Length: 120
Image (cartoon, rainbow, N blue to C red; front, side, top):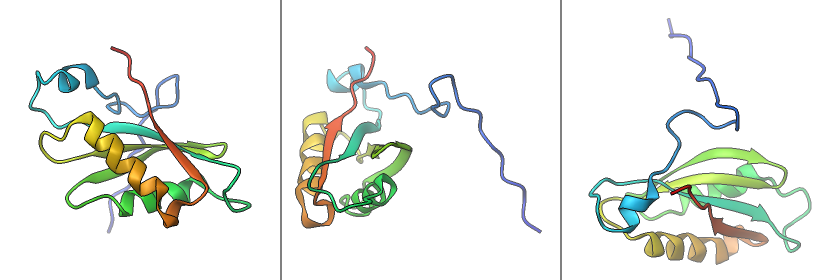
């Protein structure tokens, strides 16, 4: 017999609890904690008709280097927000370069990416 799935409540902005990303200490080199970096993946004019942000997000996550991890945070209106977590002390600019290289690849033709700014 399987256990019922629990449903976590979302906050007023529609985010799941615990998805906030404490970037400031990490970027300043004052933390040895691995944090998630959030990126917005959006459809561009070059995307195929009917392109789904969920598909683009899953493609990007599967193309991350091992042992990086990724998760879809939200999808809506031609865009998705994903959380990318590299292992160890990978700098924020290196994470941004890696994600940008993946988005420029053939598997994500017609999509753009931009880091999501966090409140400091």
